[in-house]
Image (tube, rainbow, N blue to C red; front, side):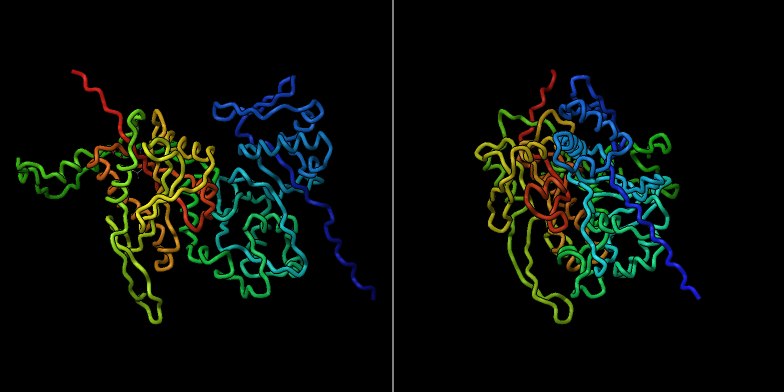
Length: 485
Ligand SMILES: Cc1cc2nc3c(=O)[nH]c(=O)nc-3n(C[C@H](O)[C@H](O)[C@H](O)COP(=O)(O)O)c2cc1C
């Protein structure tokens, strides 16, 4: 009897191409200059030779990365253009079989630096899906996302989802190759590089929570890290802020909730005309100020008093963790309340205009009541201040921008499931303390709802999951309003 012939395996190579993502229009002029028009803004992308321009035209349908990886002058020109497009978020990438035009995945970058790379895998390597990877429906597509990843993968073949499910437990490449319907090493290597997959070593055990990342990552619950990266700027390419996304479908809710229909107890009869207390006056006087007097900026002495009043460590103490064999934990007392007395919030001051203090980034050492300079570049300072100015729709930058950052592990070491929500509640109590203190001192201030966690990570060198922005606050001397007679 003849032995059955081995089923031929598919030898056609998959190819990674770069492609314009269609969120803009590209104009190529006769002199070789290229401009992209995005949301009404123009982005100058430089100049190309005629030959390079001809090659770059293929970006509309897809240009293989390998076609401009060489050292020729044209390849180098195209490479510069493609990287520029990538940094402006104008590209997506496809992994496909060009022969039958089958697209396996479309990769949508979420951070400007994303570039598709393959982390090499061998037959003996074991891989497992990251516990942060999540597959969901978006419109009519299936997307694979992770707060750890710099990119989102649009899944082009349902069989990929089945393979991802198989990767919920560690799998050796050689075994995976034999046991799943869909196998493509290029895809696994791209997913590994993008942190959707982890490679396990001999000491990694079963590839569960403690094997992924450092101790700081171990403490993050899945939903908290997704919430953090999706509710801030810097690690996602989705629109953020007042986009009025469903205004045509859903009407706005009224400013004041309509009363319940039950029996009403009128409280207005308790009104007294007693003189109002200083605290009530402070509450009533508090309001947001977005326009600052740059000829009379806030002074270093005022800043010192503001920080002393609002955030300084007042005392320190220790207590045992309330579980058997738990370590002794250090605590502090500060002027605002904090969940579990964790005091996980740190203040980073971006100073634009403060009398007696140079422009720059500073950390407030709340224990020592001191400012410590951090070497951030002029460009980064400008970007952070410009974003705050934009968020306030203000005529200029704040004199001092306070970025409230959280040391996430300080609170998630103890609390499961509610850690991130507690942090945001702590930010709320801190912001009200800031507002009232600024009002009391005659300064102007305004809370800011957005923060860029990627920019902060670059400015400080702190990884986004270790310590990062959860709130921002603008402070300065408010411009005096001219009162008309
Ligand atoms: C959490 C929070 C986020 C805010 N974000 C912004 C913001 O991004 N830009 C802005 O101009 N104002 C922001 N504000 C200020 C509000 O717009 C302001 O408090 C509100 O309009 C009420 O006005 P008042 O503060 O003058 O009483 C924020 C306030 C809070 C509490």
